[in-house]
Image (cartoon, rainbow over all chains, first blue to last red; front, side):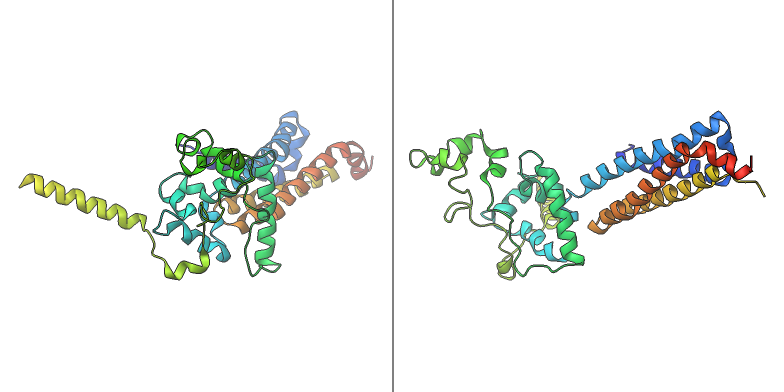
Amino acid sequence: MFGPTSILIAIIITAVVLIALVVLKPSITVTRGGKILAFVSLFVFPVLGGSMGISEHVERSKNTEFCTSCHVMKDYGKSLLIDDSSYIPAGHFQNNRVPRDSACYTCHTDYAMYGGFRAKLRGLRHVYSQYVGKIPDKIELYNPYNNRECLHCHQGARSFEEGTTHNVEEGRLDLIKANKLSCLSTGCHSATHDVKNLPNLTFWSPDKAKKDDAGAAKDAGAESNQ
Amino acid sequence: MENVTRMERRLCIAGMLIGLGLLIELASLLWSHPIAFILFIAAGGLLIAAGILVYLYSLVSGGDSVAQDTGK
């Protein structure tokens, strides 16, 4: 009903009204009540509103829409809809293996101490490059993709631990877990965003899939009535 | 017009800075875009922080300035 954003907006509006009282009639701060009012409106609410605002913006920055709102990222967003689940990002996005509303953040944040914080600092650098600096001709990761990010979800899963190719030879699983053999190695899960090849690919449309499902259900209902 | 002491004037400045910062924060919340985040941090956050500092300064320097302003 009332989410954090609504509460934050209510705090900001209340603070602005109380601040207006202090600004328009500063002499009220002579009384004890006025001093408390000034303290609450000029210190407590702004600190509360500011820290909640940071938290809210940081949460929003995890959204897929947020990441793909910059022009340079649009193709990467589009690659999540490639109609071929052998493409790792598309397969994960379309089959809900990652939350769709935070797909980029889920796979591209270091699952290490301060990983989220480092991701935000890099995000600020990306905004700088987008609007002030120069966007690199080729977008690439800062470091080779670490298996740790995959293992955050897959480690312990039966399909991963007992998978035939993961155990095809003695010690392969250990190499994967130690990040000595990349999950994205050629011949394994190497199909990722592939933005250069997008014009040659077909795309899945979630809305179309829903309509097709609804149509199939309707046809099935009509047939059962006959 | 009401005789405003130096401390009250500082409170007004603090209030205006914080109020403006909060309004910028409010505006940034209506937009989910990297620019909104920068707007919030660089403009809103800076104004709120400056306003809080002016308010705290008015508290620690309030007593003597009242005496100066009223000529006592």
